[in-house]
Picture 1 (tube, rainbow, N blue to C red):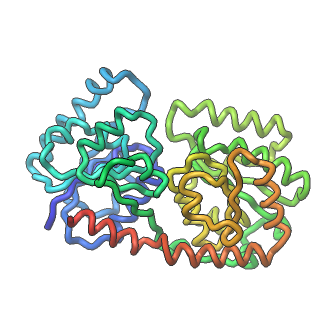
Picture 2: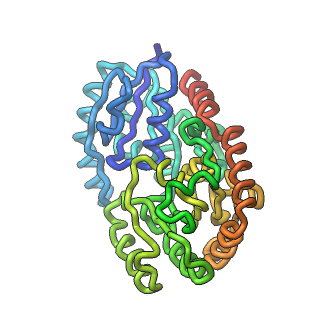
Length: 362
């Protein structure tokens, strides 16, 4: 069996960790996996050759401090990996690559895959990690555009288990609500400025003025400590627009299907969205989408078929299209049905596993 080291160093649980766990749950056992991770509990049910817990560096610091702090992690990892003798090292994101940069250098002649899931701000980092990679897997065409002059890149969309994210017809969700006459709109994402929940709150004010029988949920939590101020800013915006008790900050929800099953429309106001896992989760559960036409959303949502795409920062249009859906049960149902069809066809987990197996094997 081919020996593969997987590096997923984040302590928090975001789309990258969810995607990797789902891959490991479904992939057959023709590979020997050694996982280096920042969150052991999240992968506790996955059968692996070995698991090594590290403490990743998440706070912003100078390059010199980063190198010094990361040396200990890398030293421990190298000692164990020398015994394992990997044939391939897979880095689940730029953060994981940078945390284990010494491992990448030590095993310079070992094949390395870099799974890129983010918009990269530093060209120097992009060039360095590209040089160290034998294969660059991008989670959307939008992300792959960052690597214009390389043959190493390949776009492999994320996938979900469409049997876990089962379709839910709009009419069948009424029993899940405290008040069957109240509709629910959600924004589901980590709390960070580029996810742009601020525009969700602004749109909520306009929607609520037209229809007060609506509940608004912001689901997600701060993953990066430096974004803690943003959560405070969201609460201040809710208060400033008189939406206390109307827009609720729900925090992190482990089983997101319980939330999606109860909503009527998902609003996704992110800008430069690398992929948008919550979009395929919601569409698989027959939920129509109203999103900014930015990044990966353009590759997932079909305008006027599975939802609506709106120019960035036009929160008035977000509100307008959401009201169109709320006022038309048949339209919501039709968009939901078409959305699930699209996920089954293009974003199912089987397609993702098949392509990732080819990458691991070759």
